[in-house]
Image 1: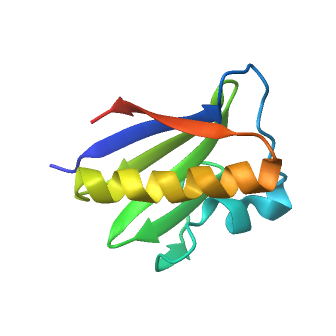
Image 2: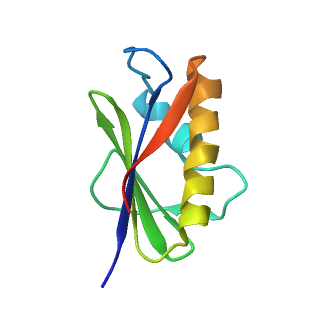
Length: 102
């Protein structure tokens, strides 16, 4: 059975939306230092890392991240942490992530 681990990346302590223009999605949402490739599928941006698919979807409250497949929890958390830092650097707003489901 394939597992899905879900996160939400949003602004820290504020209701602001963290916008990322379509042309910047690959640069901002693909984690630096990880071997990741773009793949087709649902979501605004989708990559494959270590044989699992990672999708990013813009929601009203932030960026939903879904990791579909067997990736250890600590590795998945690290990946989302890297992307969260990239979003913070890109937007100039402090962002945080929360785990939605394991």
